[in-house]
Length: 274
Image 1 (cartoon, helix red, strand yellow):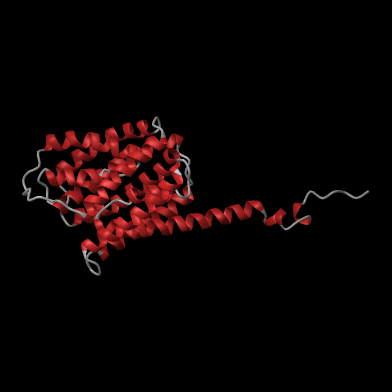
Image 2 (image 1 turned 90 degrees about the vertical axis):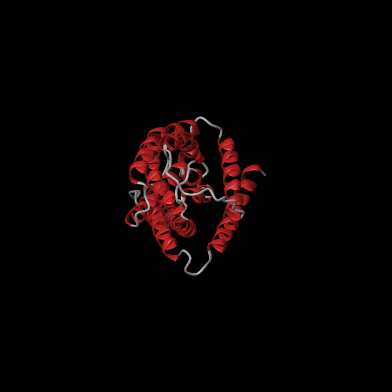
């Protein structure tokens, strides 16, 4: 009577290079596609001065089902990393309101965990409704701007600090940066648009850091996917900022971004509700 071998390689190819190896390869390939997709989204977001988190939420949800524990931690981390590089660039150009920016960043960083707490206790379908409504309005305003001649003036710090509290909580609850609400708010308060974008980048870094830390105990994310996607997001944002206004006019860029986001949101909505 012969001895039975415990070596699975003698029985099948799958024993050595089977399901585990195939799953690993599929995961790496998926991470590569995600990184490339985020790079494209970050490129167009960078051209418009947006953080990538706003566009990343519906895109990442095509690969991961859990909005709160997978998609939002990833989008917030990506938004914070790309905002950090944007803040460095804006800072070197002198487009950050130093004192007010630090104050806004501290307040946003303190209250953003409340947004995470709310997201973890809100029906994901309701979060998607909030997201679709908010971004749809943003895209409409993007292609139909109605900026009045408000005039530049000194921003009232107390008013800005009070307004950033609900903005940071609501944005974090949606898993995105504060920029889509904070930038127009700062402009309405009298800040020059480029300075508003630069100050916002600093605020997003603080918001994303504390929100991500609060997400971590329950987050279900892959470190390799985060690293690859972050690299793609940073590269896309950098070249998007460098590419701005060199080949396409700002109006054309806004329309391209709006159409791309609209198509992605429509597809995501069909998968969710139909």
